[in-house]
Image (tube, rainbow, N blue to C red; front, top):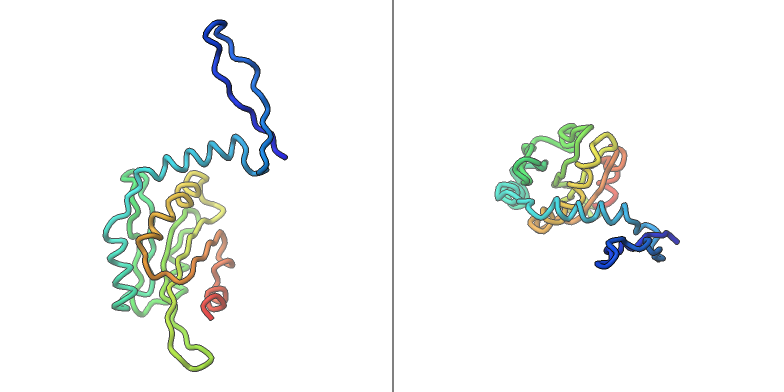
Length: 179
């Protein structure tokens, strides 16, 4: 069981705060550090704006099939999710993986076309949350806490993949999830 401490306000008479009182926390992951990270993460997403172009490019990929993938990034200055790269109809999964930086986080959606064992042509859309180990901690927190805002706008995503390493989002992983 993890221990945390309850902070107590100073007494108006003496001006001194009593000693912090220990609290028993049933969730071992819930400590003061975890609470601070959660609060900072919530503040980071309060003003996060998802640009209209993000949904527009996604809908073109989904309905018109003119794009194979869309990569999104967060611009910390404008506090907005923007389109970083769009894959043409001839580009494949290898180009998507090459478009993801090795030292920064990104979101991506990929339209995966495949043939089932019954010889039926199918398509599934994957949402990929890319957070490599080499990226900054601040970027990881920002992307993790902002993900749901973008996901809500991307109606029609079938599967979600979170990856910190290229092996976690390999083509065989995508194919296995789709079938």
